[in-house]
Image (cartoon, rainbow over all chains, first blue to last red; front, side):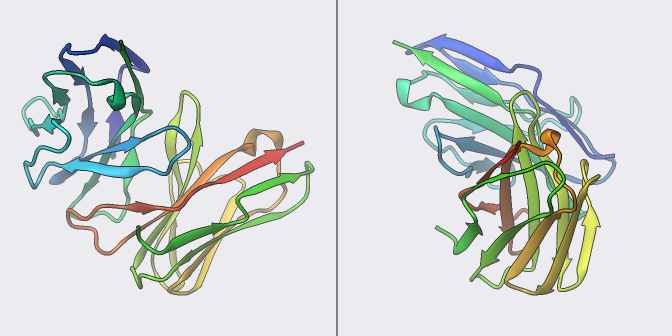
Length: 109
Length: 113
């Protein structure tokens, strides 16, 4: 079965502090992991995907197949990072594309 | 932004009535998805399509049906709306399934009274 777990509903950090949003997955095939961000009242948009290993807006994420995790990290949080973050899972051999329950990030001044 | 639009954007309907939401794309993408977004539950997959007339159930398909008679349109129907189907519904499209991102519509806020 395909499953994505985001254990934190809400994460509050102070501006300038490091951020880590957790994502764990379950999938029997070769997984493809993504992070999406949703700013207030806007549609979801892609933040990054594991295959490209890029850094967007200072965020990075590394796929750890041993721990079945794809945690999102940023060394210094900014107030404009406040948003809802979703981890998504696709994969070889499936058309399904599923999301976790999301984590709301609040960056405090 | 990808050419994907949802209609209507807002709807209030009564319990027991049928409701159809439309997702229209101009990108000629093969894969289309319907999700509902609820606090505490995130985005849950209702149905998806991998081609014209090819659809399958997602995680929360009970009470919903879909149709895709042409590439650009993916319709979601609530056969007999219930209050538990009050939600924000998002449509998404993908060009492929291998490491391709999803593009989302603006969402439809549905209230069942």
